[in-house]
Image (cartoon, rainbow, N blue to C red; front, top):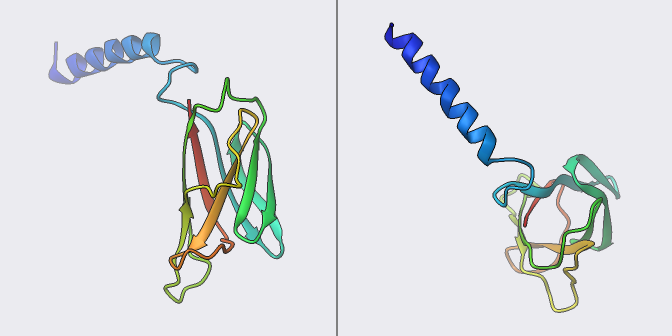
Length: 130
């Protein structure tokens, strides 16, 4: 048996083993994600999974509604924002303010400048784990 065929056989066995351990219910898989932005005075959703809608509630503030609700509000989310200009002005996804909500049905996220003022971005990427 050649080295290449042994590696191929090993890769097949590893694949079968992993397949039995990781499925759609595995906690390491994202339960929802979305790539969206505020472009031309409207929300543009480029791609998503388990997201019903994205609503702009104010400048730099958005509500992401899940297509299928989370079991509860004890999930983890992370987001990144792209700078809206090429001038070096950065945009960041920041910790929710006290008026923002995190429920099983939706999460409110904010985008701000490095000076912590709310501002829109042409691209925000949100991932939710549970």
